[in-house]
Image (cartoon, rainbow, N blue to C red; front, side, top):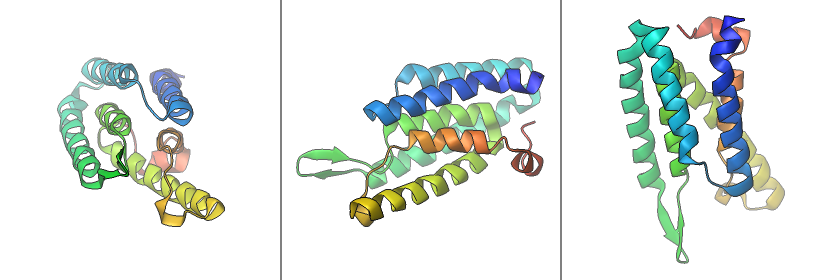
Length: 158
C-alpha cells in the first residue's frame, strides 16, 4: 500500500499533464514544479541515499532534452516548430528527479510509444514522417508501464 501512496501523486500529475497536452498542446509549468517539489521531498525524507543521484539525473536528462529541443527547432512558414516541446522537456526533467536512474527506462518506453503512435497517425493521415503528435500521453503511458511487475523487477525504484 505504501508503494501506491508514494506514486499516486506522480500518476495523477502526469495524467493531468497528458490530458492537458492532448487537449491544448501545452503543459502548465505548475505541473512540472509540483512533480519536482514532490520528488525533492520524497528523496530527501524517504530515500536520502538517492538524493544526489537524482540531482545528477535531473541535470543530465534536462540537458539532453534541452539540446534535443534546440536541435529539432525550426521555423516553417512563419510558424515555430520543434519535435519535442518545452513542456515535455520540463516534465521529463521533473520526473527524472523523482525516478533517478529509472527515468532512462521511462524515456525509452515513451519514445517507442511516441514513435508507434506517430507512425500510425502518419499512415492514417498520409503525412508519414512529417506527423506532429502530442508527446504528453506517451510520457504518461510510459510512467504507468514502468510500474508493471516485469519492468519493476528489472529496474527497481529504490
